[in-house]
Every structure is written in C-alpha cells, then in structure tokens.
Length: 196
Image 1 (tube, rainbow, N blue to C red):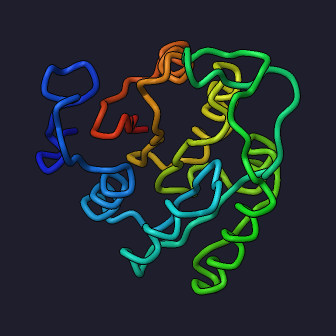
Image 2 (cartoon, one colour):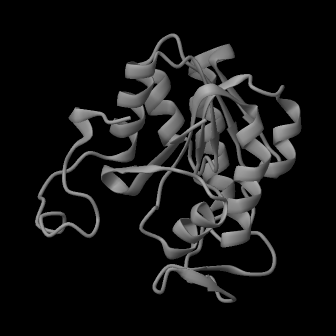
C-alpha cells in the first residue's frame, strides 16, 4: 500500500540528508489514520505523550491507549551512537517528568486517552484479539524488546489494521522486524508499517 503524500526520499536515498524540511512521524501517522479511517490505536512507549496527543488533537474520532513504564529497564540498554545494544546507556531520561507531562495532557481528552503504566508486552493482555486498528511501537528498541512487542501485539490488530513503528534506521529495530518475518514499507522520518 502506497501513500503518495508520503513519497519523499527515505534514509539511504541521496536526497534524504539534504532535505531541509521533511515529514515527521506524527504527520505520517496522521496521514495513515486519516486515509484508513482508523479509530482505535495503541502507542507503546509514550515518553511525554506528544505523539498520541498530536493524533488525538487532529482526529476527533480517535481513541488512544498509551503504554509506558516510565522507568529504566535493567540489563542491556541502547547505544544511540552505534545503533546496537550496549550496557551503558548514554541518555538520561527524566521518567517522572515525562510521566507527569503525559498524564496532565491526557486529562484534556477524557475517555479518548487511556494511559497504562505497565510493561508493554504484559499490557497486551488487556486487549481482545483483533480489537485494534493499529499499534505504534516506540518502546524498547533492543532486538529482543521489539520482537517481544510485535509478538504480543500483532494478534490484537484487526485484519487490515497495521503494526506501525519508527526508528527503522536503527539496526536493532530493523533486525527485529526482519527476524519476525514482517513484510513492511518505509516512510519519512524512519517510520515503517506492516499491514495485518
């Protein structure tokens, strides 16, 4: 499935690095939601909630469920410089502040924005099979983490719905998607999607 409005140079294309302005992941997601008429989605890895908030502001019929632990995970973390799993996390996240911002912003949307403070894969048990239009992955970027989320959430997506994620340019994310055997397409801002 192609979306002509999203056709622009992708990572790896010669024109990509010279682009002054490009679509952001919120724009890509918004376009997909509009084109497909999606009404129920889940975002894994909320951070401060800006992606779900953007989508809710632009799609009045949309209901979002957001899942985040807002805590550092033990064990391996991500090395943003190499794109591979590492043991020393060079990024400090202010999880408490991000959670506060997200929860405060969520109040504006009432029953349209449900926040779940739980491990992403475990939270999938709260949803019926084939009950969601889309799931947006932006949580644990390790190979094992991405694979675990795909395995847990893919059965929750309706036929014709989409598993969507970002950071396709991260080697661990791409490797996990490939390991899971998903057929996917790429879009600007390293967004990818796979139709169920």
